[in-house]
Length: 300
Ligand SMILES: Nc1ncnc2c1ncn2[C@@H]1O[C@H](COP(=O)(O)OP(=O)(O)OP(=O)(O)O)[C@@H](O)[C@H]1O
Ligand SMILES: [Mg+2]
Image (cartoon, rainbow, N blue to C red; front, side, top):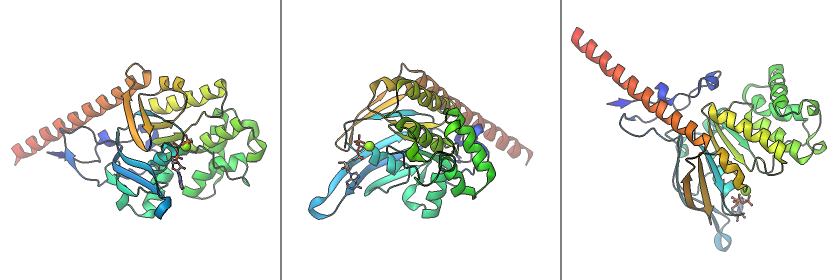
C-alpha cells in the first residue's frame, strides 16, 4: 500500500499554507511503513571549484538527511565547506557530483524556472555577507523577495515594514545599507530572508556580527520559526548557540566529521514531537483509507 506526497503528513505548517503551492505534489510514492521522507537528502555530494591543476574539492562526498522540522547547527573550521553546502541546499549552486533530493524530488531534474520558484517560496537564505542591494533602501531590500514573486505592490512594503518592526528597525526603513551598522545590516538581511514565510531557513552565521542582545533577538525569532514546524540549518562558530538546535553537524575538509543529536535541548523535543505527530497522522490516514476502501468493497 502506498501513500502519496499529497497527504497532510507531508503538508507545510498551516501558517505557511497561505499563498503557497505544494510543489512536491506528484513526487514518487512510498510505502507507509517507511520513515518519513526527509526534506533534504544529499547522496555522495561533491563540489569542486576551478579547473586543471587548480581544482579544489570544497565538498568531498557528503551524505546527509534532514527531516522537516529539524534545527541543525553546522560547525567547522573556516574553509571546511559550510557555505558551499548551504549554497547547494538553497539551490544557489549545483553539486559537481552526487544527488540532491528536496522534498523527494531530484533537484537535478527540476527546470531552472521551477528551482527559482522553489527558492522564492520555500527557502529563506541569510547570507554570511548579507548581500543587500546597495542602491535600495532598507524597506525595498526587505520587500525584494516579494517583488520578485509578485511584482511591485504596496502590500509588499507594508509586510516589509511589519517584519522590520520585529527586528527593531522601524526607524531605519529609508536608510541605505551603507548607512547602517554591521548589526543593523545583519538584522535587515534576516528580515529579508524571513519575509516569504520560508519553510526551510538557511542561516550562514546569522549572529556573527551581533552583540548578545541582538543575537538573542535573532535566535528567539529562529526558535519561533522552528516551533512553527519549519526546518532550520544554521552555520555558527559559537558553541553557546547549540542550546537552540536539535542536532549538530561538525564538518572537516569538505566532509561530515561528526553528526550528533542534541537530545537535551527544547529544540530536540519540538523536533521529535513534529516527527511523531506526522507519523501518527500518516498512520491515521492510512487506517481511514483502508476502512473506506473496505466499506466501498462491501457495498459493491
Ligand atoms: N567560488 C569559488 N571558487 C573557488 N574556490 C571556492 C569558491 N567558493 C569556495 N571556495 C573554496 O572552497 C572552500 C570552502 O569554502 P566555504 O566558503 O564553503 O567555507 P566555509 O566553511 O563557509 O568557511 P568560513 O567559516 O570561513 O565561512 C574554501 O577553501 C574556499 O576557498
Ligand atoms: Mg562560510
